[in-house]
Figure 1 (cartoon, rainbow, N blue to C red):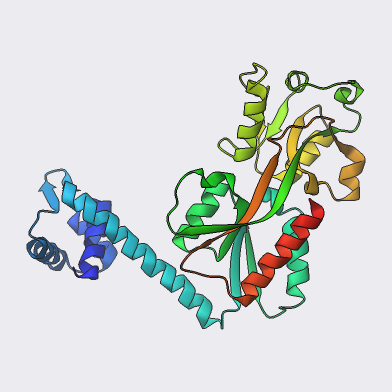
Figure 2: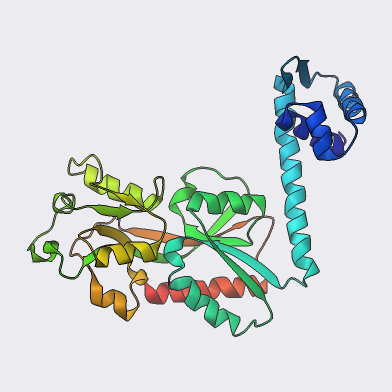
Length: 300
């Protein structure tokens, strides 16, 4: 199979039209149509159904389309890697969870950068699932995130645990809950919560702990992806939030916010470096991973 024809097929299916695909591919419509006729002849199967409402793939067309997309993704990944090589490999792009970007990653980067002053580092914060899909697309050199999301299969990704992260429930220092001799999750359920966006692992942990005591949902939740926002909200309201213990390193934070005396085995998570098996980490990238591991272990 000619890879160019497979890419043409993918464009036609995604546009649902020969004319639109031809414009996108910058070739003439007759040439594109002829290319698809030849592909079907070579394979001996019908790939596209052409009707008054546009073009749709047959079952075989859908099958070939998935492989065409993989080829296109591989080519895009190669282009990204070549762009890095064009800069003598001096550009590194990593993606991390927002909760790690407040202290762990900055401290690790500062230590690493002193040994690699000529390397340009790009750090991106995203939700875990967005980190993984971006890694599959070749957007990042590696990801630092949670291992819990590896309960489903993402072919081609590998992970290595770096450190254990401890989560705590925080409130402002003069919160009423600090007057309780013994706290339960039911006590915490009487107050509003700031939580990560729907679908994030941390919120799932909170919901499971609440459900164990018959609480069906978080009270008055505010959803956000910013650790800084949550800390400011806690300091100025009755809101509660679950945050990594290392996220309260600054003096101002510790003067305003305090961890409540409640814990559970679920309030721990493994942080790992996740990378594509085809893009092994070189010495410069591995050095950065090592610094992240060391800082994470010290702070946790």
